[in-house]
Length: 416
Image (cartoon, rainbow, N blue to C red; front, top):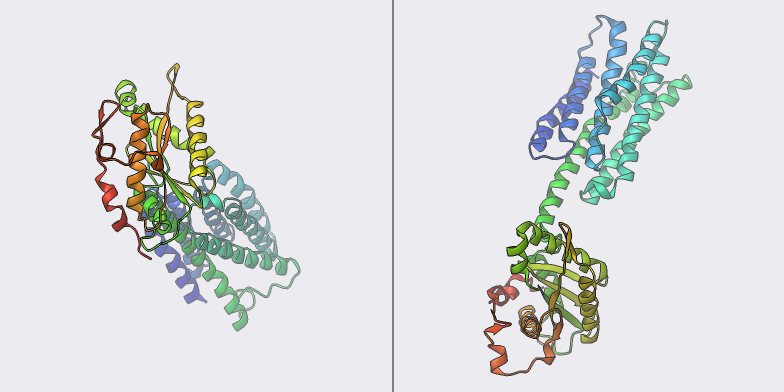
């Protein structure tokens, strides 16, 4: 049994530097988990030492160490799900009454039952709090679903062992403790119970690592400022809707958008206001766009919206709704409201179109909308198909910007 205790203590101690490294990466709860693992490893190592000195003191201190480790673990999981950590005063308020009960039972002859019921009952409640925290904060954990489920299963298993131990002691049939009845069966059960704690710490590590991976994926797929899809992510989502080999019309529309007078807004009110304007536009658009729409920021003040299974008529309706919504939602500034508008170019897919083909047509339509006065939409099919229109260098007195990335849009896309 001593070897099992030592192995469990070492397994938990190994997690401490991992948690500290995650703390250096500013992972929430990592330092609290490190403290919990340190306390838990010390508790198990102390038990493994078999010290009999000051036995009455050990009967109080060892259970308190175990409960402190559990409370710190609960505090760490609360931080993972974006809840405040347990305050030191809260920990003291919980542990002091438990210490008093343990001390009272220790002074009684044959106090094993009373001490075990206090310690296992308290641990059951704390671990139940961990399970409840993870269930309630499932969406807020910001980690892969498999990792969150693994944590809940591990914590639930530990809870079952603690609760079962409490029940058997209360019934006078404590058959799960190797220290009470050293049989091979009890050794196996006790060993499993001890080794569950390293697994629970492992689940915490997986949660934090999963959170890191999720954060990295989000930084690649989402624009940091506005929360819209990044250009790359948008183009990857759009690619399967366009196919050079398609010979029949494809009901998919693409909207190319450009915030009007954005440079003047930046120059007059500053870049912070410009950033707020970009975020404000995404918030307004997100509220009015249909559920199947995909909104991406392609760069600067340029955005695109993919409308799968949508005709030109649907695209026009969505565009008009968005134009109206933005007109009616000015950006609130310092003691003033800043009006905002957007110009929209709309293109629908034709047989054989690639992503870049549709983007080019939507780009042409966008600049026609800006040349016609801004704050409006223009459909690609309504543009005069002549060389002068396609090669127009200015619109509204401003030089036309060249978007070289449109030419390389298709190579970025997966071909399958």
